[in-house]
Length: 117
Length: 107
Image 1 (tube, rainbow over the protein chains, first blue to last red):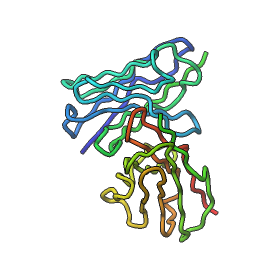
Image 2 (cartoon, each protein chain N blue to C red):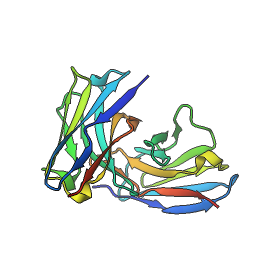
Image 3 (cartoon, each protein chain N blue to C red):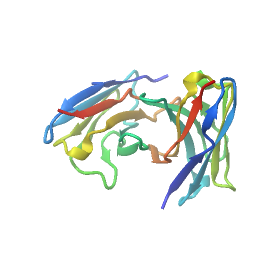
């Protein structure tokens, strides 16, 4: 059974940082692109970042470039999102999702990041 | 960047109704589009990929059509478990972009 389990969210002050993690199991992690998608409270889905299977190709939403960094460790079956200089508008549930040839199929349940003083 | 314009943003319908949701891409994306269903508090679930291919295990009342810039998700006979929010996602190019979502509510 495929599982994606996010962790690392929490309450952080504006300007703070967090490292989100997503632990994968049940599939050959090193074969797949991985994605982060976020959803602000009551809002729609926003793609954040993608990293290909070998970390060769990395993409970010333009509005987040410079503050967010995606990485992966295939030996640990994990993908990470370092989020810096957090703002109130970064408050959201952050999902990781496995990327196949047709978009995103397996999703985790998400981790909530709340940015507030 | 490719913009995805989804409509309507919400709709009210009754059990048994036929429902249609549309996504329009700002430029051609071939058939590189998926449809996702999201229930409150849950992760999205992919219903359709490649614009018209039903994901395994998804009821046949869901169907997708379109290519290029115009895409449609149709629910042929709305069931109680279908009341949720639906999103399209283009995976033709980066940045990936979702439609704004369509909330399907009970009439």
